[in-house]
Length: 319
Image (cartoon, rainbow, N blue to C red; front, top):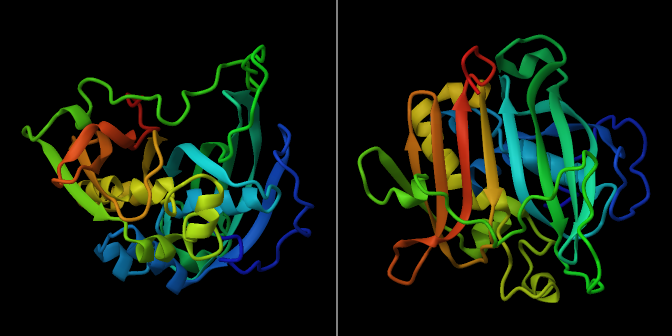
C-alpha cells in the first residue's frame, strides 16, 4: 500500500525515522487522517464490489487492514507480505470521515529466513457527523484487529539457526504456501448445496486501483526486484470476492457487528483470476479463495486465502 495515499490531518507528532523491523511494543500512531469519498470508493471498486453500501458512501471495513499497513510503513520501509488478518467491526461511518488509528507491535520473530511480526490496531471515528450506525458520538470505535506480516525478501540464515518465538512464547504461524485447505472448508465443498461462488479478475489496472503506484503491488520493476514475475495483489484484494459474498448474505450486520479472520497462503500476481467459495450460515461462515486454472476452474490445492467469519462475536454463546 502506498504511504502517500492519505493526507495526514492533525497527526500527533512527526512520523519517526524508518527502521526495520520495529521492536515489540513500538507504537503505531496515534495517526489522525481524513478518509476521502473518492479514496473510499476506489477500494470498493478495487475489490470488485458494487453494493448499496458503496453507493451510500459507507467506509469499506477492510480499509482497516490497509490503514494498518500504512501506519506500519511510517516506521518501517521494508517490503512486507501480509500473512494473516483479523478484523472486528463495531460501527459504520460514511466518507469523508476523520479517523484516528493507534496500535502497537505485539510480537516479532524469525522463521525460515524471514523476519515476522504481529501488530494490533484500532480505528476510531473522530467526528460524530460521519457515524451512521453503532454506538455513535465522538470517538466511536469503528474497527479493531490484528495482522501478521513477514519480510518480502528471504534472508539467508545459518544452518544451525533455530526458530525464534514471539513475544508471548508461541510459535509462528505457518509461512505462506505451507497451509492447506482444511477438510470441510468451503474450498473442499465443491459445488454442493449452500456453497456460494464469486470471482475477480486481477488485471494490472485493478491492482493499481487498489494499491496505487510506487510499490510492488503495482509496478512490475519493483515486483521483479523481489523475485516476482508481475505485480503482486494485496492479500485483502485477493480476499475481496469472499468479503463480497459475506456482504450479500449478511448485509449491514457484517459492516457493524462481525469478526472476520483471513489467512493468506500464497501470493497472487496480476493477470490471474481468483474465485471465492463460501459456506455461509445465519451467523457463521467459512471460505477459501482459489487461483483459477487455465480452464477457469478454481484449484482447491492452490488456495490463496482461507478464512472464517462470525456475526455478533461478543454475543453470549458465540465463540
